[in-house]
Length: 86
Image 1 (cartoon, rainbow, N blue to C red):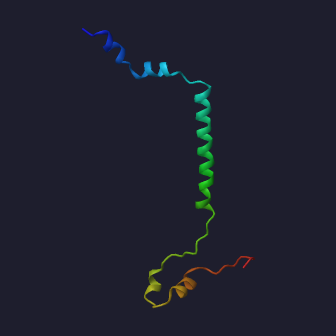
Image 2 (tube, helix red, strand yellow):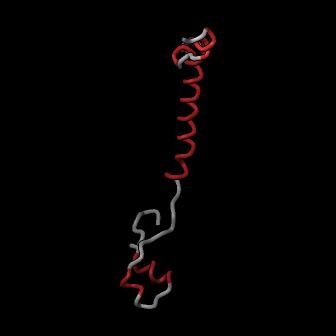
Image 3 (cartoon, rainbow, N blue to C red):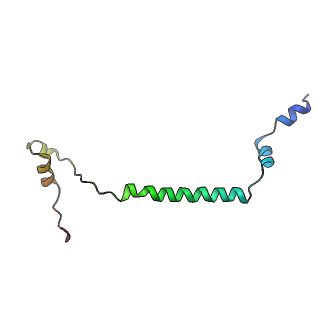
């Protein structure tokens, strides 16, 4: 037979949550602030991925056998810039 002490210490999660309090103004405010901070942080870190321009080109195996410098290989493999700005 269970004693009175066993009944008071064996509360389940729902009982503890109702003792702590349901979703109120404070919980809603914290949720909204955390959501806003995640959006702002995502926007701030996106610049690292979308703003950079790298000087890179693909390796062409056929040019490797010609014993050219990397600059010469780049000039042969990358199309010239034909835009109006140069």
